[in-house]
Image (tube, rainbow, N blue to C red; front, side):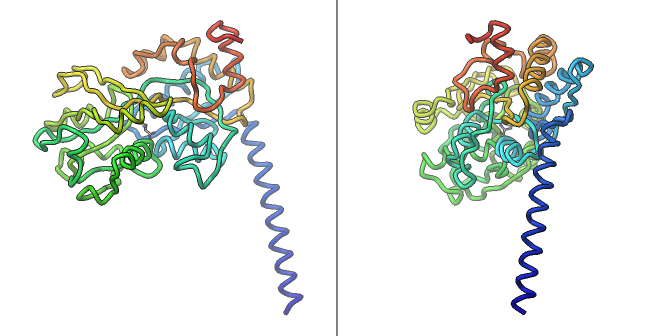
Length: 331
Ligand code: GLU
C-alpha cells in the first residue's frame, strides 16, 4: 500500500516535471514565434479598433519584419494584463491605472503579486470614465447612482476596477445600488434603452460605438462626474486626470462634460524581444497619418504625447531604441 502510494506520488511528480518542461518549451516557442496576439476589449469599445489598427499597420510591413499580428477581443484592461502575464497574449491595451497596479502588484493585482516584466510600448489616447443614463432618469451626478440599477461592468474590465476605486473613496458597496449588474460591454447600450438598467458605465475613448449606439438608440445622456472623490484620485495618483468629453459628439451632448480621465496604454512584457518591439513601434509611428484616419477617437493622437511618460511600466527597450533614433525622446 505504502509502496503503491509512493509509486503514484513519484509518477505524479514525474508528470508534473514533464508538464513544466513542455510548458516552458511552449512559452519559449511562443515568444520566438512570428505570430503575435494583441488583447483588446469589447466590439463596441475603442480598444478593439485600436488593436486592429495597430496590427494592420504592423502587418502592412510584414515583408520587412515577418511579424503576423492579430487581435483578440477580451474583457478589457484587467483581462489583458492577466493574459499577458500568463503568456496567452503577447501584447495588450490597458488603462494606465491598471497597468501601474499590475506592475506593482497592488489593488486588484495584490494576490498575483508584482509583474515587473511588463513594458510600455507607447501611450494611445485619453479614456473617459463615461456614465450614461436615459434622459428621463433624473440622474445628473454621481451621488444619484445610489439606489439605481447600475451596470457595474465585468470583473476583467477597466471600468469595473476603476469604479470600485471610486466607490471605496465614497464609502459605497455594491449594496448601495438597487441592483449591480455585470452586463457585457457590448450589450449595455441596448440594456439601457430597453429600460433593463438605469446606468451604464464604460471607460473608453470618444467618440465610440457604444456611446453612439446608446445616444442614437434612445433619449440618453452622459452624466457629468464632477465629484470630490474624483478630485482626490486626480490629486493622489499620477495616472488620473480631469478630462472633458467635447460637446457635440453625440445627440443630447450639447455641453462639454467633465469626468475622470486615464490614458490607454499599449503594452507587452519583456518576452517580446527588442527587435520585434522596435519593428512594431516603427510600423505604427511611420504610418501615423493612416493610424489617425482609422478611427475618430485617434484624431487626437500626437506622437510627442504617445512617447511621453510618466509611464505605469518601464518603456520597452525596443520602443525606446526607436524613439531615441527618431529624436522623440532623449537617450
Ligand atoms: N477601458 C476599458 C477597459 O479597460 C476598455 C475600453 C475599450 O474597449 O475601448 O476594460
